[in-house]
Image (tube, rainbow, N blue to C red; front, side, top):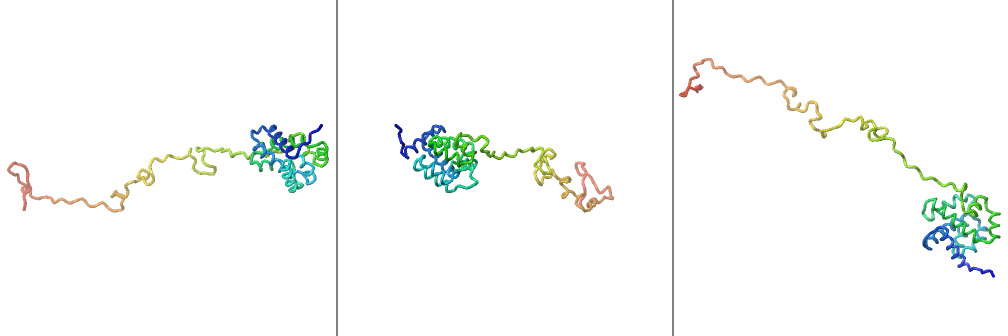
Length: 226
C-alpha cells in the first residue's frame, strides 16, 4: 500500500533532505537555503513547467516557485540561477553553487517520473543536466574575484612617476629655516657682507711733550690733568 503524503508533509520531507545533503545544522538555516534556491529556480522555468513541479514542494515553496516563474525570461540559464541564489543568500558563488546543486537534486528526486519526463522534454539540455545530475561541470562559469593590485615598487624606487626616490635623496638633518641650511648663515650681521664700508680707525691724540707724563709718588706713570 502506497502512502500518499500531504502537501505539508512533502514540504517537510524536502526540507529534511536538503538539510541532510547540505550538512546545515539547523532547520531555520536549511529553510532559508531552500527558499532562496526555489525562488531563483522559478525564474529558470516557464509558468507551465513551474505548475507541474509546484504541487510536489509543499504550499509555501509552491508559491515561491510560481512567483519566480512570473519573472522568467529567455536569458534565464544555470549561471543566472547560481547568481540569484548568491544574491538571495548573500553568499559567495561557490557556496551558492553547492546549495543550488543540493536543492535541485533533492527536488528532482521528489518528482514523479511523468513530471521529470516533461522537464527533460521542455528544458534546455544544460539545464536538465544540472537538475538531474546535481553538478555543474562545464555549465556554470564561476566568476573569479578581481585580483588585488601587486605593488612593484618600493620606497627606495619611489612612487611611479615620482622625481625623488628615497635611494637618490640626501638626508636632511636640520629643520626648515635652520642656519645649517644656509651657506652664509650670519650674512645679515657681518659688516663685510652688509654692503657698507668699514668705519675708519679711531684716532688717538699723540702727546708731543714726553715730559707731560710724570711719575706719581709710587713711581708709576701717571697722566697729568690740565
